[in-house]
Amino acid sequence: MMMLLKFMLPLMALLKSGVHGQMVQVDSSKSGFVGSQVELCCQFVNSNPPVKISQVTWQKVVNGTKQNVAIANPALGLSVLQPFKERVRFKNPAVHQRTPSLEDTTIIFNKLRLSDESAYICEYTTFPAGNRENTVNLTVYARPMIQMSLSTTSIVAGSKDLKMTVATCISANGKPPSVITWETSLDGESNTKEIRNPDGTFTVRSDYLVVPSREIHQQLLTCVSTYNEEPYTDSVTLNIQYEPEVIIEGFDGNWYLNRENVQLTCLADANPPISLFQWRYLNGSLPSSAELRDDVLIFKGPLTYDIAGTYVCDATNSIGTGSASVEVTVTENPMPLSAAERVMGVLGWVIALGIILSIAGTIYLVNKQHKHTGSDNDSNSSSPAHKKPSSSKKKKAADDFQGPGRFYDELPNTADYVSYRLACNKEDYPEQHSPPIQPPLTFLPHNPYTHHNNQTAAFTYPTPPGPISTYTFPKEQYV
Image (cartoon, rainbow, N blue to C red; front, side, top):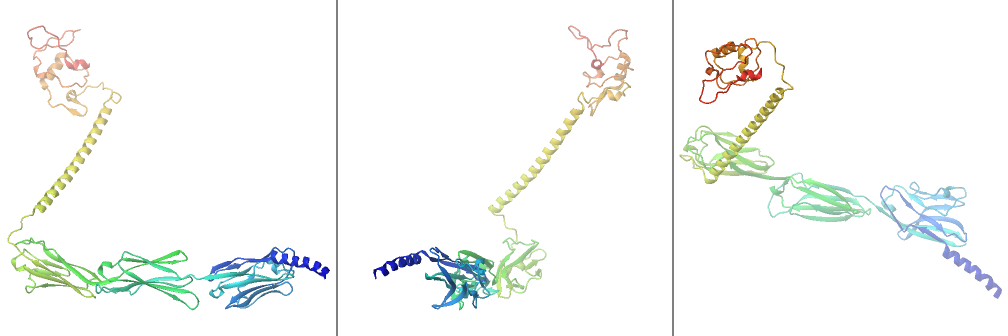
């Protein structure tokens, strides 16, 4: 008996170490979207001491029972059962060999369905260790279809105390359900409902309620649907229909006798647009001088007392009719301008004068700049580097008094000029242009002195008291 116990104890210790040293390793959870692909990993690890794997079975837990999905048997081969046959396969090529290796029996799910969501068991049957298994939870998500729309294509403004649904936002057939919020400046409220569908998805519907009025027409309303922390937005512009709101313009309170070119204009804010304008004169029939042109009432000719009275404009659209009236008075003389009008008139004149002076100043500065540029060009052309050599030909008499580009204000006496040339014998000598002669040539003596050879031509003024100095004629300074 003692010998038997000595033999059994080492065997039990060996089995115990094998039980605790070998395990099936899987992911605790996996997830994927409808129509996508997902891998369910399963591996037999720490196979020491080595054991014989007789079979690997994947099972789905359905309502507390196990449903076979795929089986790998070294002797019988691989088998995938319905309804998974076309969508499940073993990933590791070693499993498909004639002598398979079953340490890694990961399977791949294709085209996930909502019905695939469940707990899956990977079970190893071994000898002599027995069965080993582990479980992975598969979650299948469904992306929702998000849609936003107006409650109706045309919302009619009603009572100020009655709220109505103007827009609806729907997140349909999503898993998990979406969270819907609204972004708008409108003073309204939302009403949200969540519905669970038979296939396990959720439909979330949110209505936005507000009092329809002309003030919210063309306002933007945005729905934000958040799914798996990812926001989706959609917007609509409100189309609120309302009856016309009418005002009359044109009467400034200063209509007086014989004033001309006056008219009344009917302005209407409406949706849909105005289809009909009508004018009425509460004091009877419209004056003969009044001419109707849709929304404008024109008074032809000089004003008379006959046009005074109350005028009404009726504007009509498909929702209703709006009206406005104005009381027209005609005075004998124009009304004096008010202090504010006088100030505005003065300001207008000051602004106009300022504009005119600015334009004139600009023109003056431009012209001045052009003249300055022209004078610079003239001075450059008259510099020594640009001066043309004098001609040896005889110049005309007029050239003695005319420089390039300028005339002297007064020409000297012709007779005095000729007598001086004869007296000085300068007829054939080329002369340069000279500045105006001071004093004038009219003071030259009428009887020039007799010419003597080797003497410089000179003349003297009448002898004044004191010492007499000789004066050389300015023209000879340039010879």
